[in-house]
Image (cartoon, rainbow, N blue to C red; front, top):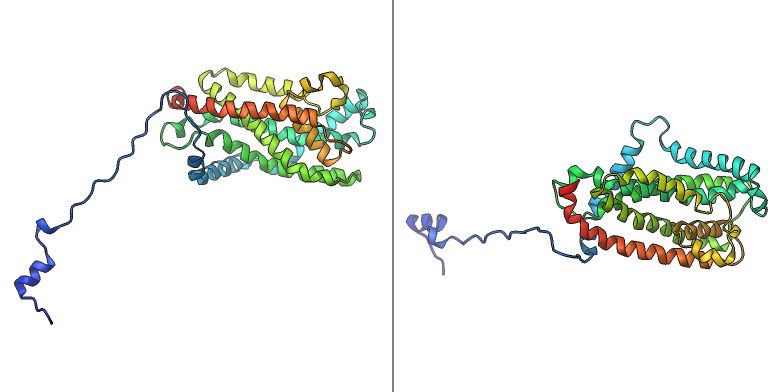
Length: 300
């Protein structure tokens, strides 16, 4: 059966009366407010903002090498010059090259400097990241944890370049890694987590107390000589090894060095002690950062 519309009916069909129009539902409103007390970690939110994390890390890399004279060569010159200085003053003059006779001293030092450079750069940038991003903090909402994480990811680029230098030096001295090299990614992640754990604490404290940033260079310098980079950890008496391992970078450097050039048993006491310290600092730093981030926009 066909239905034909009259002109009046056709107009009514084309322009229905106002009473026949569908009602538009109001858009939902999202209210963002600070929660009192300790806040739980929202890892799902971090995953949702992963693109912003990569953007911030890429921006740090571009800013680091933009309008520079030597560019990425800085990632090679810093560990190279430090290795040469340590080889002269600690190796030849200090006599530590006799304590590492089974391994060429330049290779021994550079195996410690490569993870240390990653740690020191990531720690410095992460500690100052909240204050440096004050304009971004006060304008838009995003997980504040992305701020100290992004400079750590950008430091991985320099780490990769330094690894090429280390591989070339090992090839020059004909030092070949063994099967323990399979554990190298674990100690790389170990160094990143150590920098993040300490960086979370310092970034949150630095946002409140601005004089903290002046202590960071001194802390890194002191930490350098408290880490077995220019000397082997075997000079520490055995009964104090576990105390020495409370330095998070002791386990990182010793494990990194063992996975590349070491032989025999791995340095489990130092690695386990350092790992427990890093784990405690990381968990407490995450919760402390989450607690203090609600005040960042007011104090930075």
